[in-house]
Amino acid sequence: MTQLTTHTPAATKAITVQEIRNLTPAAYVLRFDRHQREFLAGQHVILGIKDENNAREYSVYSGENDEYFEVLIKEVLEGDVSRRLKKLKPGTQLQMDGPLGFFTLRPDEINTARFVFIASGTGIAPFRSFVRSYPQLDYTLLHGVRYSNEAYERDQYHPDRYILCTTGDTSSNFNGRVTDYLRQTAIDTTTQYYLCGNVKMIHEAFEILAQKGVPTENMHAEVYF
Image: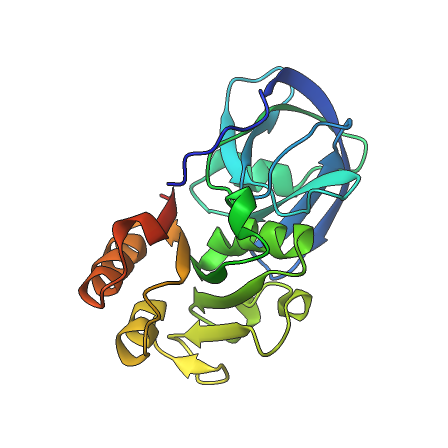
């Protein structure tokens, strides 16, 4: 994980739901008040129902210049928070801690480095924040999902920079996991690799990149359990 000096997080604050945008039957975007809090793309917030102790971490999906915060959430059947947040109405109050975290871009590399972003599922969230905050980035985004309809808002990315990898259908750029794509593709060892998603994918991708000669300092990860 990239270590970088960041803004000091604000204390827990009540925030108001603005809207919920459904992307698939299970995945949705929750938009809520920002209250002028500063953050760095790649950071996360901790969200929960107001006056309750149950809360979860979600990467910020919106950009640094947006007037609101957004998070990308996939409803988990056994998950209390994700199911309850999906049912909220505009105007409902939540409580938020943060923004927090060090999964951010190094300022001196934003305009000079080449990036490959590797995501599984909703792990694409911080990469949308990166691209939305810094549209000049030289990046390629690999997004691994089961079905093509889980290519969350793919129109937000340049079509030549977004590679969809699916395992459940073939209507994508690549049929297979993102790790299969990495094995079959030439790797530039000078590129900065950022990975976000489930821990199994990240460990496997790290091993592949290391075997292909990518130095450890060029690999950065945020794990979604």
